[in-house]
Picture 1 (spheres, helix red, strand yellow):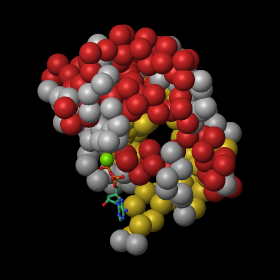
Picture 2 (cartoon, helix red, strand yellow; picture 1 turned 180 degrees about the vertical axis):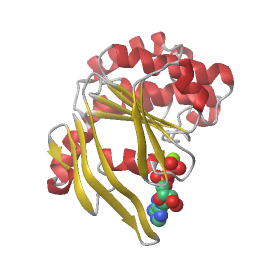
Picture 3 (cartoon, helix red, strand yellow; picture 1 turned 90 degrees about the vertical axis):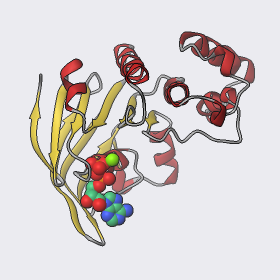
Length: 220
Ligand SMILES: Nc1ncnc2c1ncn2[C@@H]1O[C@H](COP(=O)(O)OP(=O)(O)O)[C@@H](O)[C@H]1O
Ligand SMILES: [Mg+2]
């Protein structure tokens, strides 16, 4: 599903990530764990084909990123959900339209979109928020909306980049429970975090990153 082979990524400021080698299968939940600046976000961006390696191979859903043209990148991205620490909701769209976005991009009919959005909003306790705008919601609610948007089309892969960073404990634990639920429904999850206690709470395979290198790859 995801394959990194001898991947090196350089920024103008110098080499940032080097000799990354790993494979992730479609049924896995994997933590990327390492301190701030170690390279977690850069790895997620290479999987999302937003950054491209200077050397080596990044393959996602059987597509090598270096060979991918715009259309192939779009096709991969349709199957990848993203959740960030800072939510990135569209401020001028209400919650309904934020959640519906991936289905609209896929060209689903609006009555089918409606059905799916309502069902998911009910499931996530967001039903009463659908007509509101992102800035009217609490941080925890906003993150639930980004998760609804990221998972409404049952993506093959979910990339979560420090999704609990700005949340209180209760909202953080809801986010983590939801991500595991999505995983248990068949989505491959890559979860980047610098927080040791999250790994301990819900153990899974962990890639430990330090200064742009994977120093450990272990199963808890
Ligand atoms: N656009 C960029 N230009 C230059 N250096 C960058 C850029 N993005 C990230 N870096 C550098 O790459 C390294 C890894 O960053 P990042 O992937 O954001 O780490 P993390 O997500 O683990 O905090 C850091 O040293 C960072 O300064
Ligand atoms: Mg980061």
